[in-house]
Length: 164
Image (cartoon, rainbow, N blue to C red):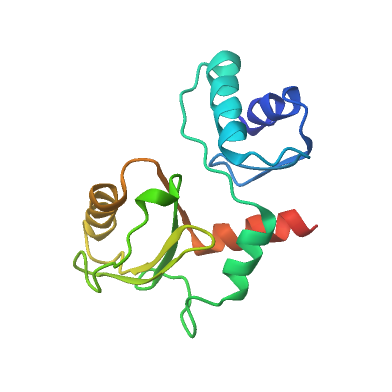
């Protein structure tokens, strides 16, 4: 899937300032609509009809992402192989874990659950083979399959894009 085609679906829905960040389906856009679940459904349906792609859509507003970045959830850590920083966004806030185990999977540490952004923030040591996939399996068991994980660097890039 090219970003041009993906952006075209969003433009076809009448969104403005449509942009993409990296090549992994991160689309930014503006709309006056405020019903996020309805927007997510409209986008999912448009992806199927326009591109024959079935994909979960999880929307976060700029203010939610800006607040998350400003909270500095990984103080003193740098995104690298032994400290791979991630944010996993949950589609359904009702599935959010009230308490997350300190060590759910070897070589991964959950830093916290951010309620406002509905995101699990974690540090994984990717030099441990299987650590990332084990953590993703744990997340799906704990929070369901309607989740989306992005590296912390990607989250920061998305915020910068929204502010440019």
